[in-house]
Length: 433
Ligand SMILES: NC(=O)c1ccc[n+]([C@@H]2O[C@H](COP(=O)([O-])OP(=O)(O)OC[C@H]3O[C@@H](n4cnc5c(N)ncnc54)[C@H](O)[C@@H]3O)[C@@H](O)[C@H]2O)c1
Image (tube, rainbow, N blue to C red; front, side, top):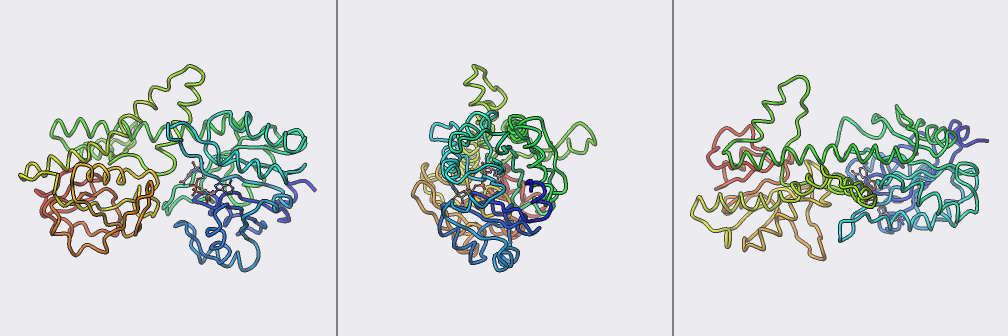
């Protein structure tokens, strides 16, 4: 039976490697349509929790996960033997940047080494982790061919399919977000289309894995560059004494030719601050400078320092020095209503404030504590003492915050997200980005 037939009659077994923000929602979807799904993760506590039906991922309620574990459709493992039973293997491991801000593909390479031991003819291998154009063909295929002694595209299938998950998005999830797939050969594309077509409404093929890799990087570069543009609009507006948010909202009334993006304290999360640098790195190796990406990165990474100078200037206007002032930072998650603080600019802001001598606390109902470079910071328990701070700095616009109450009780509010937009009373206390 072909893999397409096995997927159609639900006898196919699928292995998902990496049960994080991308892998777990995917595994749950696959298991939910009746595909026996085996997850692999090197993080044992995570594997144990999945097997206990407990989800750490906001977009996957434990109530959805637990029945799939209980009825045997989904199980998690710390070792790779189950790859031998798989018809399809989907890799969703992290792709961060190294200390020198170059792509770090070591997680994919390690996962492929482990997969290679059990890989066999007839299987489909899909990479979902974001990477640079050419990685699937230049690194993944030779590794699998070397491990199996077989030829990709002939004896087994290989494809790249970028993940498009948007954590916290209540409207678009795995099922109703079109999936892009790029197979090595038409047969690889047919197999990968069959896999995703089983649980995603629309699957769109592109001509190659390289093209699919580039699609993902275009999407994220588009966001990084547009956010860079509006962040620069915020920097310019601050100099001109104008409100960047008001300007963008007014421009957004144009029904064509304008798409609003909003400034903020900097980029956060696993994708937008990182992925465009995979593209610029690849182009650098071809002696080409990706100018838009580098400029956007320079502006976006300068935002935390700009936020700190806004706080410093606002305190100065009240005859206070930043050094020795009590500053409360509201929100360390990188965006609204989620618990993910990876690459969060709020963390950089907290560190910069502290370096300048401010006495900082943070409050985030979604992030009770976080660890960064072996330093653990813990959220204060609540906002009862808000009035005792010299400045309150809004870095994440969580919906759980009562902005009227915050402005009412704070001495000074520096708002980097325009979260206080609808607060009518006490606006003289608010300083925008
Ligand atoms: N989080 C997002 O919003 C998002 C969106 C689109 C794309 N992506 C991309 O998807 C990929 C995965 O991101 P994520 O956010 O799910 O990461 P994550 O850190 O949440 O999850 C990755 C998981 O992989 C596991 N892992 C690491 N090495 C492994 C190995 N060798 N074998 C098995 N498991 C291993 C980790 O323990 C972790 O649980 C990245 O390339 C990322 O850029 C992420």
